[in-house]
Length: 340
Image (cartoon, rainbow, N blue to C red; front, side):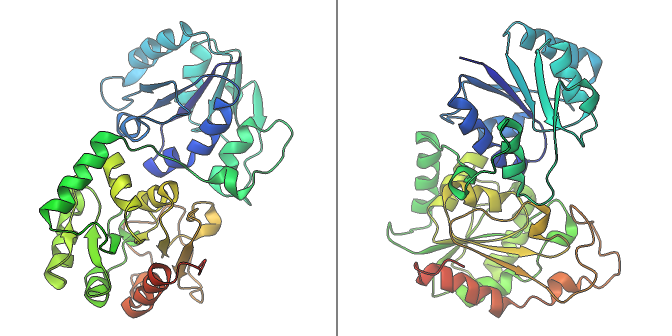
């Protein structure tokens, strides 16, 4: 059976969206993944992955020496094919130096000259589908079921979430709504999560998820709705996925928690401001509702979302009301037959 190496060293959300590709490749033979140390923890326990190889490209493995050390390690594994889910020159050079005979990546990538096969980058597809097309020599587009991301929280993650919920006296059958107010991109942050938590108070217990950097945002939410639970910085990424999986709905910006929810099958209200789902990064949960200012002529303004609104008004987020987002969340929470 052919052995595959997938190189994915982009953002966390990209790593989650690579899991359908990993699942498909696992049907053909063993699959190893080169990824960042943070994403390596996220992929722990995944049934499609034989080995996770952490590449600390900005730390211990930075520079040409780090690249060469890792390439030499990969060369010893004798992979049949490398799939470049992240298309930098560095990733392409890594697989070339590792002497992997078949190197497949997107025709638009910076490292395309070191590939043995170039696949068109399809702007009309979800990014999970684009990544799957790297392994589709017949060009068949994937079905929705094939696109669903997956993660595999284990006993440690379940125990961490159990402890958090016990600490806050959450009953086993209590309805939970997760909110994810953070984003590394400033204009992607919807400003009304405290007001949303206040509106949802009484419908469900609100749980704030995110990193320690999001704790100030969580504190503002708890101040507005004292029954809310601040889980920011308390859980690993995989445990955060487990927590999101126990919630009836997640309300999130266009950021990594949206993709965690897709992997865990949690209904999702996704708030898009400067970006749009048409870029290929919308929610893939079976039940999802996308909120965006459709009539605003200045959106989208950026592929990622700038730190500040280029026009100074940030209307794409400020004009999305808490009551409207709360209604979307209640619909998904209380009406399981509603798809969006």
